[in-house]
Length: 394
Ligand SMILES: Nc1nc2c(ncn2[C@@H]2O[C@H](COP(=O)(O)OP(=O)(O)OP(=O)(O)O)[C@@H](O)[C@H]2O)c(=O)[nH]1
Ligand SMILES: [Zn+2]
Image: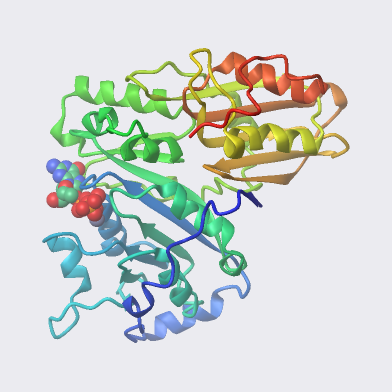
């Protein structure tokens, strides 16, 4: 795991008292299940994000109340203003609001937290054996990158859990407005950031829009994130198997190569919008050179496009060939964090070795990014004038 100094410190320490103790409602059936859970197995965490009111809690409530065979621990974000559903979930037998772990009839656990989900997860991990999956809802304005980074950086958590994927719920009616919103400071708006980071994008509330409007939204979302899978729902009713166990961040995603091959470079659909860029460069890269390439983009931020705007990479995914490594290597990046991980798959022969990268972000120029990567593989000087070592972007 590589991360820039000072990049992804969590806002921990706050939610200690939010999730004190589990309400014990033990059943015989549950105890039998506990015995069957494998000791030492890592628990997947799926982060659920999406703009205010998009349908995140609706999705979690659906999962909490539906009958399924999974034992899922759900961490809801702070109670929204007057959301009846959220409150009803958190009401105890004597009608008082609780902020603690509740064990539900279908095997799920539930908790609501105020600030960072990190403490809640630490508390939750003490109840190991009672669940096999964690779903975490972020607040509507959250940058899911920060939440996702938390699972990468926190080594103590890392031994028990892993980030399975990021789901972004988009409001079909207001999603386009949210995506087009211009921030006065020129920063990328939250809605776009959330879509850019997603492995799964759920276009929810399709009952409220015409097929024409839905199609516009679909096109815009696709142009932002060419990699994520798009699902369409009403009341966030989605087949659980299509959103869980994605292994989006680890080397178990063996189908990654095939998946990456089908990702096209997209055209911007909104001013200043985020796009997806993909390219392939044959050959091997030295590990150090590859690190420099990625770090220039994610840390140094000294790569610019033709208009001299800084390239901002939000998500990076790729399959690369590293010199002297027989196995294919996955590269994953979220904001300033990235990771290189060997897959169990070996390159068959040298002629097959290639690097395929997918970058999602703003001001990206495919030709420049590719040219810089070719220089990385061939170990030639950076010919491009768009690489400015001494000019760091704000
Ligand atoms: N018409 C319609 N309404 C929906 C649908 N899904 C959710 N809603 C409603 O939209 C409102 C917001 O849903 P929530 O699930 O609370 O949204 P959220 O993303 O958790 O919202 P915050 O946590 O406040 O950011 C609720 O009143 C839901 O009942 C849908 O498919 N169609
Ligand atoms: Zn909510």
